[in-house]
Image 1 (spheres, helix red, strand yellow):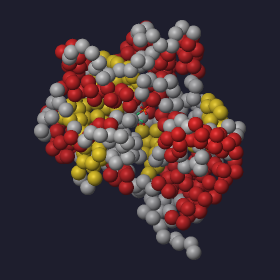
Image 2: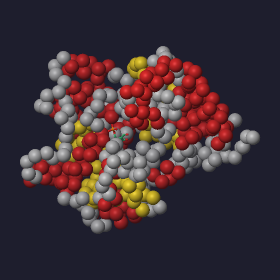
Image 3: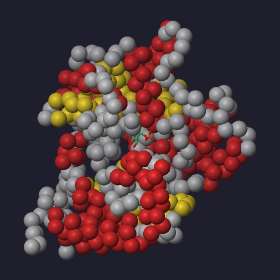
Image 4: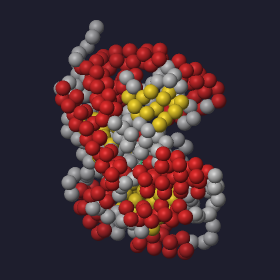
Length: 457
Ligand SMILES: Cc1ncc(COP(=O)(O)O)c(C=O)c1O
């Protein structure tokens, strides 16, 4: 018998189940080549995929890609999808942006990696310094690596052991930050594999937007740095309260703690990231994902003071491995891509287009949600926007996590994919790239409208 009990999301569980079942069958019927490849992959790829979390999409088996260009992705069954996931920000400037592919082609004929600098690295650092207001830069291959290296530098530079993060944060596969607040107490994330150290000994965690808790956590004077996204984006989106960051920065200064802002996702805000746009002055910034237009590369920048402290720490250390850097970091190919992306893609006119298109999407989502009388909200940060299953935007990680509903989320994602539009598999994030047209946005809105109709009308 059908039940009609509404969850706090405003959607009945049996409607979610029915939609999921129907959409799974539809997906299986329409993707025979992806299915055949998934079966073939089972033999030599662990979990049947190159990376285990590629199974975390809502699809019964992974969609296999034939090609991706601009805002579109074509699968191996020849179907085109409008891509609002964009490699979870890696392709925020579109798939294979011509400026970057041209730079890659030119550099590919002149060497790929040498362990020596070329002019591109210098040019990239000059542009980064100008845009982010931080004078000294280093490079890495991924934002995870950049964050890992930054924590080492910060601990070495300050002589302090503890790092502080906000509950529900994600900064890549940096072990130190996998500490959650559970019933008000720090707890190491149980899902972390093979971790043998007690991370709670050197990581402190408080809720975002909680200045009192932040002050208390800083009070012992042992916190090297706060590592934070200026807007939380990985537990759904959580905006800072008005005045939160200026007051937090004042507290940090009072306690001699540095602020490192991870702008890997919030680079969707503008060419200098969220902090520059808001006039905030961190001691360090981390960037990754779209920085090379889709080529793996990342960067981190320090203030003059912090860089001087970090350089002094390295000079004072015995010779040998610092634990910072990898062989292929800052390779010639990555630097050529980063220089081209900074020069041609991360520019004010490009961002103006992204933001306008994303505003159309955010307004459209709000209208569709209102039409179906659902208690959901929409948050936009530049080229990025997200709908969440709560009627007022969450103020911290716990509230954002409480608003999640995995079954509902997966049903919507799969139903959208079956209608030719793809959004990020984890939570409900959508991203605009320069190739995303108004008609593409309208396609997503029409599909969203149809899917919500199937869930609640
Ligand atoms: C804020 C933030 N920092 C760092 C990372 C890690 O990026 P990568 O997986 O490219 O190392 C992510 C990944 O989602 C992220 O969201």
